Length: 257
Ligand code: ADP
Ligand code: MG
Ligand code: MG
Image (cartoon, rainbow, N blue to C red; front, side):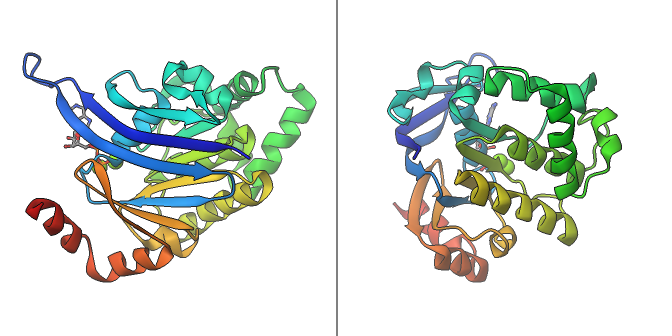
């Protein structure tokens, strides 16, 4: 069993105007995710959800000023981005980067090599990749395209879930995996996440501001995220309440505090 533990996390970014004070974004986040659990973080735009995922992934723009992140007791904040991936953390980005000139096929095999510590045997790899593509209803020609270049929103998201299936992380952080998906793509992507959960008994952190993906991927825990911290926690019934009433009750409580 694996546990990702986030304690009293504070994160800031440099002020975009260059000489102003840094901007504080996360203001004391506490969250524990273990194998087999699905957590949903739900909150309005600008509440700091992506900042949380970047801080876990080790994005250089986001500075942790206090608090801790550990994976089975190991200090994640002391690890490089690559070490985090090797330790079993996976981040699917809200805005995946394009890498012109690098084929998906090479990219995925390189990523698998980095995470597994040795290059997968070519014959096995081709089989493995084809099976994973088939499960996500992706054309085999996808492997010859440049990474994320000219991908539609839906293709980018499928690519993330393809990585999830091939890299088999211990804890997966999926930031807005549902944004820009039509109903069919949402179902295919959700089934991919559910397969990952079943096969790997992985822990999943689903970050979203819509409740619709939670019809396909049932969260065990729902955390309401406002103003850089978790302000309410519950089970999947909390997502239903947000669906019906929105965030108003919580944003007002934060504003009045
Ligand atoms: P969410 O994912 O919940 O929409 P973000 O984490 O993207 O929220 O952003 C939270 C707040 O921090 C926003 O006000 C955003 O403008 C600000 N922010 C995020 N990243 C940066 C950055 N690199 N530079 C300046 N401000 C940022
Ligand atoms: Mg946003
Ligand atoms: Mg975001």
